[in-house]
Amino acid sequence: MRLDYCGPLPESVGFLLLPGFSMMAFFSAVEPLRIANRISGRPLFDWTLISEDGGPVTASNGMTLLADQAIAEVKRLPALAVCSGFEPEAHLSRPLMAWLHRLDQAGCALGGLDTGCFLLAAAGLLKGERVTLHWESLPAFRERFPTIETTDELFEIRERRFSCAGGAAAMDLSLEVISRRHGARLAIDVSEQLIHERLRSRRDQQRMTLARRLGTHNRRLVEAVALMEQHLEEPLSLAEVARRSGVSPRQLQRLFEQQLDTSPRQWYLQLRLERARHLLTETDMDVLTVGLACGFTSGSSFSRAFRVQYGHSPRQARRATG
Image 1: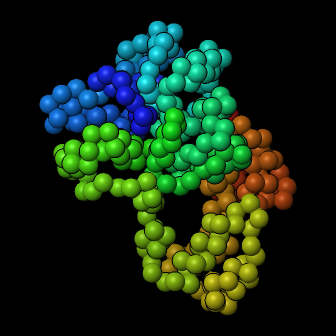
Image 2: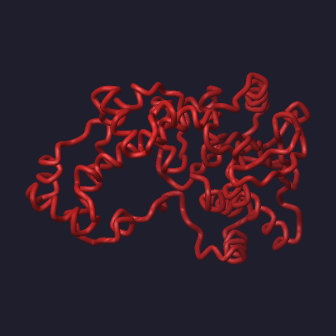
Image 3: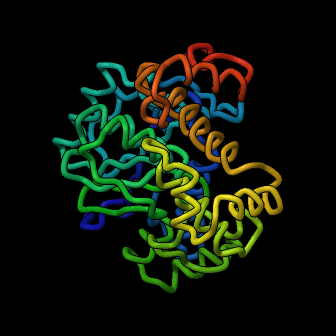
């Protein structure tokens, strides 16, 4: 998938499958390449499924794919996409890290689908790069790797790095590569075969607009929720949220109760706890640090609120994913 590729066709792409990988992201990346080969009438791309030991790998949906090769059998590749799911760093072994570095030194373009960038970052292979991940994983990545530039774009393509938000965004990444390599007409034809209504650019939003997610076009309410989402680590007072949204605290309370069937306090708390749950399952941050990163002033207040919301403690949530 590197854009300066000038080798023979078909162009080879490796997919490193890690336990619990996202099947949706993997298929979304591969299918456009397959269809491009069929429509063009010649093999433009081929792909190899790779696992650390060469054995089968089970995805997050419980389906298992057979690998073509073990990492020890792969010496050179033009491009490699790391496919992972929850807790990606748990699968970064020393042999795997050394292999990734060897590929990088040999000129391989390295990329991450969904949470794959966690492994590349942990291996020290994203210094000075800009990457994107699934919107749900971005906060955890930013906490874990604060010096790496991130965006919330659908995909990013750099000189020797690429990344995408996972899911259908992997399809957009592959369509962009097809367009740049072999022309927009082929990419459009592939998109139509996939019943993908248009070629989305990297700047298309990952998520629905906040108004659509909330199911309301009330500008004051949308502004209030946006402020809450932007201030999770250092929460604003509800009085300040109301002031910045242009309403009184009483009006803010009424808006949330009428439109969202909850109070602004409970909504704000749930946002912070959801962020905490993602950090617990996707990073190795200790429980107290997670609580502080989500606006709680002490470990006890964090644990108490988390248990009320989810029925178990933060430590139990961490153990459940281990």
